[in-house]
Amino acid sequence: MTTAEPPTEVRWRLATPADLPFVYRLVTQVDPRWYRFSRHGLEPSGMIGLMGGIAAGAIVHDSLDEPVACALLADSSASGTGTFEYYALPTPHAQRCAALAAPDLLGAVFATSSPRRLYVERFDNDPHLLGDAEQLLTPEVVLPDFIRIDGVYEARTTMVLTADAWWPWHEARSESAE
Amino acid sequence: MITTSRIVFRPVLPDDYRRLYEIESDPATALTWRYRGQLPPITEYEPALWRQTQQIMVVEGRATGTIVGYLQLHDTDLRAGNASFSLYSGPEHRGSGLVMEGLMAFCEWAFGNWPIRWLYAHSFEHNVSAFESGLRRGEAVRLGVLRERMLVDGELTDVHVIGIEREAWLASPLRRRFNQLRERSLNVGSSAPPVTGV
Image (cartoon, rainbow over all chains, first blue to last red):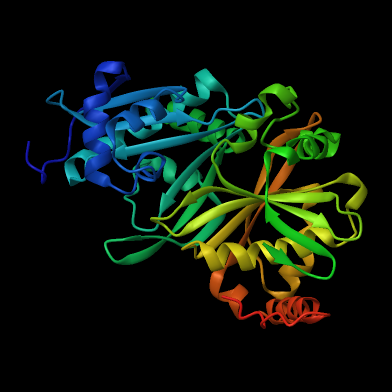
């Protein structure tokens, strides 16, 4: 498939320890945008340690069954919050695949973990990978000039997707698909 | 170490841990993010105290010689040039202004000794009044509010994210006054050199 062709099919599955090499490659390719990992540098054993604290993860595959993106649910807490982290290889093809899979991944998070409030954090120039679900995000905190990436300071914004926003949208989307 | 007429601001020593533990055992403090109501026993306190923490500075009241509170520099990211801080006040000293004076000393120390552009603090709704005067004067800015972020004592509470920018601190009239007072307290009865600041 070339980058000009829209992907026709994506699938996702739960991540396993065998996916660590792919996740590490992804972190290095988007560095420092996957801040959870990049903020500590790219020393591999440090990243493996950080992965140990992740509640759940998923890998997105394209139609050729190549891994193109990874989603993690982190920082789940008793107060009903969690952080959804979602990164794709830095190619238009991988990013399109990620955007197509995003609503299903979010649906799986809400169905299995029932967060009240799911946080998404991103830098100014991060690609938008949540597809149609992007419209549900509400910004709550903006840290200006947070980090310099390729010579330009970018803000880091924390957005929230609430269960109250998710479920009506998800149900309407499911009904229109039937 | 920074000294004013009312406080001594200095690095924590192991002998101080028991007093810090007392401060953190106060119910209003024990329910914060760090322990979420599950303060470890004193025998396991030191590693918990230092988790993700680069430095701890205590605020001693000069009148009593006791530790009235402390500040922690944590989650430092030198690549990004930012860090977070936490501020704890002994319950009997809240409202005295001593720990907020310690916060001024902390800003002076942190921006003068670390390559940091921004300091961040997360404050529960019920504690954010401590920052209100700084927010009004402009040394601090409210960067946003995480609505109903935490469960404290069974109630959902907002968390305010407060930022202090290096340049704003360096240019602030508050900092100028703070250093004038420092200089005055150093020069009383001594021939100490003037404080030059950052």
